[in-house]
Amino acid sequence: MAFKGPRRGQSPEQKEFQEDVIQIDRVTRVVKGGRRLRFRATVVIGNKKGRIGLGVGKSNEVANSIQKAIAKAKKSIFEIPIYKGTIPHGVKSKFKSSMVLLLPACEGTGLIAGGAMRKVVELAGIKNILSKSFGSSNRINNAKAAITGLKELQRLPNKMTDFEAKNAAPKNETKTMPKNTAQNEKKDITFKDGTIPKNVMQKDKKEPEKNTEISMETSKKPDTHISESPLTSINSQ
Image (cartoon, rainbow, N blue to C red):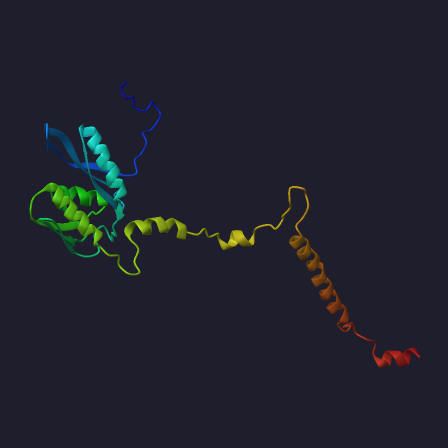
C-alpha cells in the first residue's frame, strides 16, 4: 500500500528532533557457511536547542538500520549549555585514534567545522564555534569524539543558557494598569443573584458615620452671631 501524504488543509506533524545521517556502510560478517551482508547507519539527532544524541544501527535493509540508529540516538540524548550562541569554554576530547578541539567564538564567526563534526554542532544549536580535528579521519570516530567533548562542557555559575532565558522571559512579564484608570474604576460589585458582598456593604455603612462626626463638630462650635450691646439694653429699660 502506497504512503499517502497529508490532506489539504492538514499540516504535517512537526518532529521534536531533526535527524541527519552521517554515514551508511555495508558491513560483512564471516560465518561457517560464508559471509552475511548487512548495513550500518550512523545517525545524529538534535532539536537545535541544546539537546543532541548519536546512535548506530545495523540491519539487512538501509531503512531499518536508520530507524534502529534513531531509536538508539533518542536513548542517548543529553543537554549542552550554550551561552550567546557558543560553548562556554574550550574543550579537547579523544575517541580511539580521533582527537577533536572545540573553542568558543564571538558572534558572527559561524560554524568553523567540517565533516561529521559540523553536523553534530549544527543540530546541537551552536551558531558560532572554532574546531579542529587531529589523528584519524574516520567520520564515525570524529562524530563520537565531538559528542564526548560536548558532554564535558560545564555550566557557568549564576548564568542562564540562551534557551532557558527565552523560556523564562514571558513568565516574568507583568501587566500594569495606568493609575488614572485604576482610580476611576467603579466599585459596583454584585453577584449574579443581585446580592452585594459583605465587604462592600461594610464600606458603604462606614461612610455616613464620617458625615455624622463632621456634623457634630460643627454643632459644638460657638455661635458667631453679634450679641446686643449693653447701651441698647439700658435704654429699653
